[in-house]
Image 1 (cartoon, helix red, strand yellow):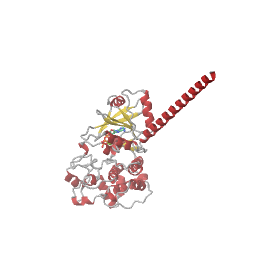
Image 2 (image 1 turned 30 degrees about the horizontal axis):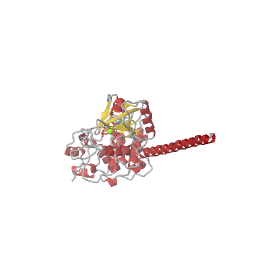
Image 3 (image 1 turned 30 degrees about the vertical axis):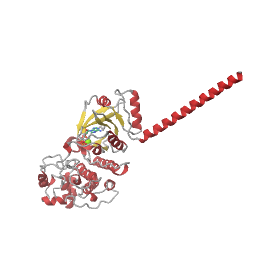
Image 4 (image 1 turned 45 degrees about the vertical axis):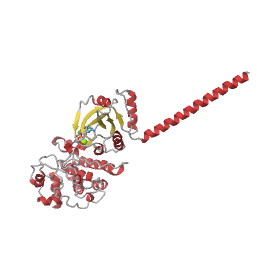
Length: 398
Ligand SMILES: Nc1ncnc2c1ncn2[C@@H]1O[C@H](COP(=O)(O)OP(=O)(O)OP(=O)(O)O)[C@@H](O)[C@H]1O
Ligand SMILES: [Mg+2]
């Protein structure tokens, strides 16, 4: 009798242990499967509670470490920005506010304009996924986003020194040529990564000084990449002809019915390079006739074999002349009218760094002969009245 009891007890114990082991094993497998699928999705759908508690903080810090953009609620964004109290600026896609994560990390929140185009959530997520997978020292990091009915926003790392235009066009804050040369190369490397090195090629469409941000050490990071695919811009950036980009930086093919490729970023980079070199805006109406439109003036000087006068005019010291001359020539190549004639960003970097020989550039502005070669004549023809934008070929030639 007692032997039977012992057998029953042992048997029950064994069955219980086996059952627990089996359940544990199943649970473990399920957890592993869930972890794998989370890692595969590039966007973490963390729908955090309205109040930012420590669990949430730990969760999003984990996701940041895993390098996935985190999904925040409207209330999170309100908490981070203290109800949008500090505005940093605004542009074609929305308004940027300063904020802070609960752990003290500073952030910039771009609240996107409400557009007519109601983008589907899945598409938004897919595009956020693409942007979130880009990691490069010369690209501004996307920490997360908000996709609520009331708010669509992007949460970026905060860049202490703001945008490059503040240091190019502000008399009191100008950077030295050597530093600007490093900045020019850093920007080029960020764009090269978007074109050639990230999982899915990204064309920026809006390279300009306002979209180059500087960290505490004045290292440049390209901002707003991927936004062109994420949302439509408001009318302030769209030309009457319906083109994309910003006047003065946008390549001709963005304004005329012509196939658009990544080479439009190379064109805008060239325009930016002129401004970096001259520490001035490309178009300043009212200057001595020939210097109003800087890129054309540089071409004229190059053609006449007088790059020295460009150097002295731009206040470039003797020791920096070699670098500045390379910047001149690379910029002239980048703004070639024909996209195929423009170099790749990789080639532009190699030329800038002196690793690739720079063949004498062709005239990038042959169409301007039509207007007698005068930049002011040309800009008048366009009806340009601003001194902040550079003139581009808007297809008037046709
Ligand atoms: N991550 C950031 N860190 C610090 N400041 C930022 C950040 N992002 C944007 N800013 C500031 O906000 C301003 C406005 O940025 P925003 O991108 O909205 O306009 P934009 O760059 O002039 O135009 P666009 O819409 O074409 O990008 C910038 O000029 C910059 O000073
Ligand atoms: Mg911007």
